Image (tube, rainbow, N blue to C red; front, side, top):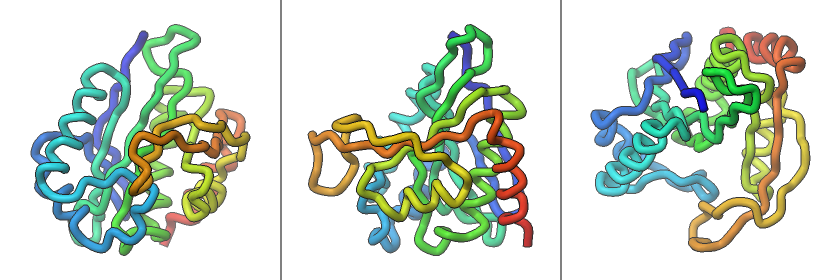
Length: 204
């Protein structure tokens, strides 16, 4: 198995910084505001939850199960959410992954449907396809999350189907239940078209 080598990814509107222990307080602050849009998303509430969240993700990173980032908005230097690469696969036995998923994404309400989200996806996809040379990027969400599904479609994700009772639900009140997962992908063949779309949408 290879590894998930990442560095800070910088754009005009957002900087994606590899997650570290020093981000706990800012993540707690980001999760303390309006939580109305977090119904389907695992977002820590309070400093204790933020510390547990960061510890869990850093353990995944140490074992090459994920590469987590904080999303720092350039306009005010504020952390407005998190995102990560996860579920890497190495079927071709290279050092870099051949397939990876983008997920675990959450943003403050004020950063949703803005250039921050679009550019963050552009930065992640560019790293996946042009630095790692992946063949496929998966993007998945709870099948009931219509807002997330439309957002994935807007950035060029192609719907592949619904996997029933596929993953642990992160929806409030559904601890211990499995959700249906809507699966989307962008392949290396799709990337030039998707890249042009995202560049256009993230340009002022």
